[in-house]
Length: 250
Length: 250
DNA sequence: TTTACCGCGTGGTATATACCAGCATACCAA
DNA sequence: TTGGTATGCTGGTATATACCACGCGGTAAA
Image 1 (tube, rainbow over the protein chains, first blue to last red):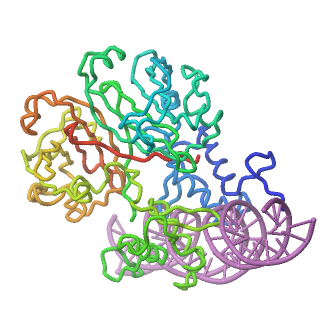
Image 2 (cartoon, rainbow over the protein chains, first blue to last red):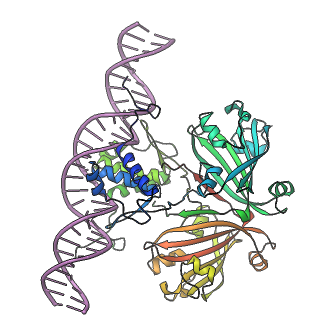
Image 3 (cartoon, chains in turn orange, red, green, brown):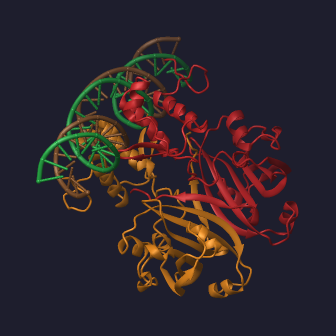
C-alpha cells in the first residue's frame, strides 16, 4: 500500500492554494494588509510563488468565500477586515465568541446529572422519550455579568463518564472533540422569544417576565449523529445578533 | 465601442457553467433528482454537454456553495434537498419569504412621507441628521394576521418621486431594483428584543408590552451606497428564526 | 476644453491535460 | 474465510493557455 500523508503524521503538506491562502491571511491578521488594501492580483501571485494562475485564483477564492476579501472585476481583489460574520453564533461556542470580542467569559454549574428524556428533549436529540441523557445546566457570564442560562443535553450512550469533566473551566465542545473524538460538522439553530419565569429570572438576577432570546440548537458530528443539544436563554437587553445577508446566486 | 451583452438586452447568454447549473437546479426542483441522489459526475457532465471538466466542476461548485448539493471524495456529488438555509431572512424580502412557506403576504400602509432624519435614522442611512428621507410605515400580514410593523427609510436624493409607487402591492425591493435600477449587493442586520409600546401594540393588535424581535437592517447597492434601511418589529410568539451554522474553514 | 478611443491591468470564463487520493468492487491467494 | 491487490470509478489539485468584459487613465481627435 502506498504511503499516504494524513493530518496525523507530521509530514502532511497542504495543497499549494491553501498555503498561499494562509500566507495572505497571516498578512491580513498581522495588519500588513489592511482593510480595502488591494491583494496581489492573480497573475502577480502566480509569478511570485511560481504557481499557475488558477492555483492563485483558488487561494483568493478561499479568502473571498470566507469573508476575508472581495473582488471587483477590472480592478482587483481587496481585503475585507474585520471579516464578515455570516454565522452570528459560531459553532466554536459561547466562550470563544465572547473572547473574540474581548469579553471575559465564565460559567457556573447550576446542576448536572443524568435524566430521562421528555418529549421535548427526545425530539431535540432525535431519540425516543425515556432515553437516558446527560443534563448540564450552566449560567454564562461575560465580565462577571450573567448573560444566559444554558441547558445542554447529550446522549449517555455516546459519552462514557462525561460528568468527570470540569465544565466550569473547560468548554463543552472542547471535551466532546478532544476527549471523545467527535468532530462537529454543523448545527441547526432556532431563535425564539420567551419571557423568563420566576426560577430563571432569579438565577439570572433579573426581574421576572424579562424578555429573553431562546436559542435552541442541535449539533451534528461527521456521521450526522446528534451529539449535543442546547437550550440557551439569553437576556434580551444584554444580547443582540448580527449578520450580513448576501443574496443567493441561484 | 464593442458590443457588450448585459442582462438588459435579450441576447444575453449566461456562461456555460451557469447554464449547466440551472439545468441541474431544474431537475432538483421538479423532483427528477431527489435528496441524496447522485448528480452526474464531473467527467460525465463534461461529455454530455461537450464542455471541459473544469467547467462542469464549476457548475457543481455553484450547487454546493448554495446548499443544493454536497460532495463526497471518491464517491460523487449528491443532492441536498430541501436546500439548507444559511440566511434566516433573505435579501429578497419579507413577501417572498412568506410566499416560500405557502403563507399569503399582504401589507397595509400606516403612513408614508418625507421626514428629516433624527440621530437614529441618520446613523442607519450613514448620513447626517436633518437630511430628508422617505419614511414608509407598513403593517405586514401573513394569512391576514398581523405579524410585523415595519419602518423603512430611504434617502430622498437617490429616489425621485418614490411615493408614486404602490407599496401595498409592490415589494419595496422590486421598486428599488426595477424602477430605480439599484442592484442590491448585501445587507447588514441586527436582531434585538424590545417590548411593544402602546401605539405599536395597538397597530399589531396585541397586548401592550408584548415582547418582539426588533430587526434593524441596512441594505447596500453594488457601489456600497446605503439605499435603504428598515426597522421591523416582529411579534415574538409569531416569529422564529432558523439557521444552520457551519464551521469556517479558515 | 471636451469627448472618444486605445492600451493595459484586472478578474471571469473556458479549454485540455495530468496526476493524486479516497471509495467500492471483484478477484485471487494464503 | 480472510486479507491483500488490482481496477475503475469518484472528487481534489495543479499546470498552461486563451480570450472576454470591465475600470481607468492617457492621448489624440473633435
